[in-house]
Image (cartoon, rainbow, N blue to C red; front, side):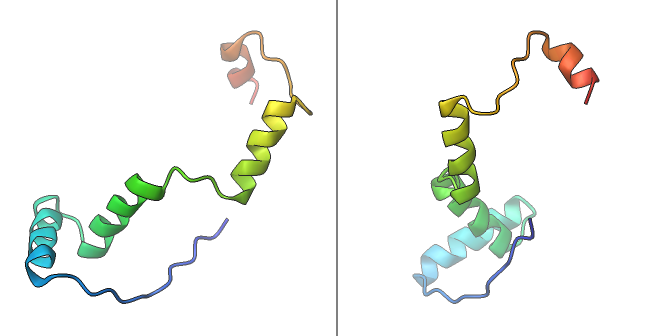
Length: 77
């Protein structure tokens, strides 16, 4: 799955933006990466359509393989 990055523009309070830039710099991250990380923390747990389908499939027990020994199952991957 290819992730598409979309360029956009936001307006921030100047003092807030300076504080955010300082935080990003302190973590040796770009401003974009830092803000994107904050957004992922806040809304990143919202499942996309593919994940919703997988959750529904798991809850309905369709096409599931019972795993009795995880170590053996992983070794056979």
